[in-house]
Image (cartoon, rainbow over all chains, first blue to last red; front, side):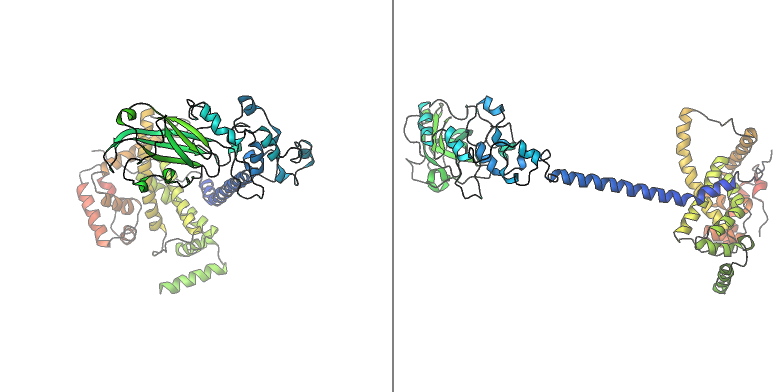
Length: 301
Length: 210
């Protein structure tokens, strides 16, 4: 049996170099600390730049999107309630008007400014281009087969941006916004849009009779659109419960005579109607005409 | 008594009347606790060979032994900077250093096994450019065979053999390092001898009992 012996000891190769490496570990730690501080500083600078850009910087016109401008411009652009496609794409000087920032604008901006509001006030332009409100309803009634649902719309109902002037091309929807703080009475065009969310023939629990159960979504552009009447084809008023014992409390405000309370996006998201045609009528397609204070909408149900 | 001795050593070192090379390990250790670079340098110079060879006998690899040695002293210096150096209870710093080296060896072996698995897929790699490669490889091969023969022992017995029979620590010092009674060290060493009595490395565990 061959005995094995421990290998002889040997010196550590280059001990001075190892010792220097160990002792130099402290500056390496400092380097890591400095690198961490530098990275943190870079993040802070980037965050500051992001905040600066978000808040619009120091008044630079380029960094200021139209969405941040005053609603007065929005009102002036509402003079065209339903712009044509050419109008929608053509740049209008009213969008460049910025009365609230004119005082602080630079000379370069002043040179490119559009004519002052005094040359053509929003109200004057609005009256010069808008369709009279009294004509809205007859015009709609002259075309009973065309509801606003099928009409070309600038945007789908229910998708209203908080700042509509920046939500699409210039001249696009919406022409108006309710102005909260102004002494001048804003121009409010009349328009209403409706969408049939649901349609079903089912019996009501109140009387057990078959009703046409319709759910509508109405979007009005006025400050307080409310429905005045609803008719179904030419069969007369389709007010629910006209033949039943009442139960108006379950009806939405549309039928109780009170005004519709709009949500923030100026829409009545889900208005339930209990219509009362006969069962045979209920199973066929009808044209629901809703007259509101903002206009008339025809909906095939 | 011990406190008085430490205070005297500290005062002695504070007066700077002697160089670190003249101080014993206990005084150097006190200086190390204050993150004194000169004390650390002296401790490194004094004990790096012991640590290095102990690491080699544990890892059977010269390069690993270098890594372990550097890691051991690096951690010691790091703890000294943090003011977290364990107090030295023995007159010499070797047992404590070997204890730290032993832990570093275990960590290194674990990580090295993962590395070997990776390298094994690629293929064996030998640094042919090194000097005395054949001699180094032969020593490593011998040490590997010794480690294999030693593998019949338990981990506790191997630790006692490494510390007492190979590193030359006293029974009391080994007991201090392993944090076991001195009698336990003796019994473990005796069992190891008994188990290795027919082994080619039997003579390697027959060190004098002190």
